[in-house]
Each structure stands twice: as structure tokens, then as C-alpha cells.
Length: 221
Image 1 (cartoon, rainbow, N blue to C red):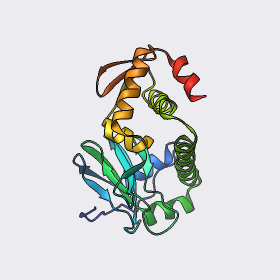
Image 2: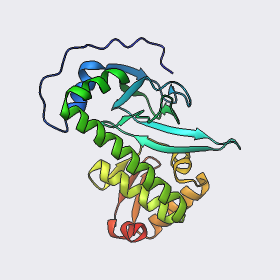
Image 3: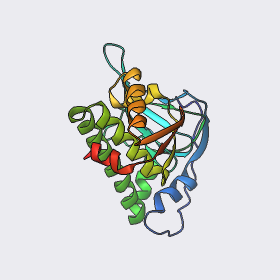
């Protein structure tokens, strides 16, 4: 939950290339804030008055279901923009997965800038479309894939973000389980099974090495 007042500059940003405009807008209009591990950034149903950009660390957005279970809807990593709501209130809660720096900008300020700057508008649309696509893919994952396929899909997505075969996971296995709609025991068992099949190696609980991307891709097909 935000307790600080965000004071944003109304200076127009200099012209920038498409793809950099939104980041530049956040740098000029936003304020960096520190959130400790597991600290709440905003709560479900709170007014959606700000947009957020991950500078360092990681963020999870989630809902607590009626039976007390937690369903994580998305993870946000450095460079990601989140808190882009269609309505006036947040549909999910957001927490820092680890100690994180989040740049916070007033929603009204970014939207007003987008109305004047086509590059900012295009980047904001891209960020919104990315969020929607992620939600659609997550829905498919939960509805149509078995445990092994879900874990493989998750690992491939994380490998794509890391840009290599070594994945440093900021989130815990409980976080992964709550994202994939599985129990932590099932996640651990599936990772061990994938390691036995030589698809991955597990040097530690937070490090995964993809040793056979093709094996994971067959499961994710």
C-alpha cells in the first residue's frame, strides 16, 4: 500500500524512439520506491491511481480465493509495467517477491501524456496488450495443461526472459505452485522428474539450468 505522496514533474519528455517512450515517461513522471520482500504494493479493490514499473526485484499479483487459497495471476520482472487496469480499482493485489525498487507514476499523468505523445501512447498500448496476452496464456495453461506441461511452459517462459539456459528464480516454489495452480509437492516432484529425464538440472532451489530445451518444448507444444 502506498503511504508516500508521489510528486511528478509536468515537464514534457524529449522525443524518444518508440519502445523507449514509456520508460522515459516513468523516469520523468514517476518516483522510485523501495518495497521489502512480501511488502504490499497495492491491494485488491483499492483505487487504481498509479501505474508501476519494476526497476529491480520482482512482483507478484494475486487473488485470495474464497477457500483461502492464493492464485497468483502474474509475475513482473525488471522493465515490466503493471497496475494497468481497465476500471478505477485494482482487480488483484500486488506484493514484492523480493526486496524491490518500483517506479510509481500517477495514472492520470501518464494517460494525459499519452494523449499528446504518440510514442508514449503506442508503448502504453503495447504494455496493456502484453498484460492481456499473458492473462490469456495463463488461462490456457491452467485450463488445458497437466502438471508437467505447466512446469515446462513456466520454465520456457523464464528462460526466454533470462535470455539463456541458466534461470535464476526470484520466486519460491510455493509462488510457482500458486501461479501454476498446483501444490508445492507437485511442483517439486515435477522438477525432480524433469531433472531425471535430463531436461533440466537443479543446482539449487532457485537456480534451474535448461539442459534440453527441445524436451521442454515438446511438453509445451
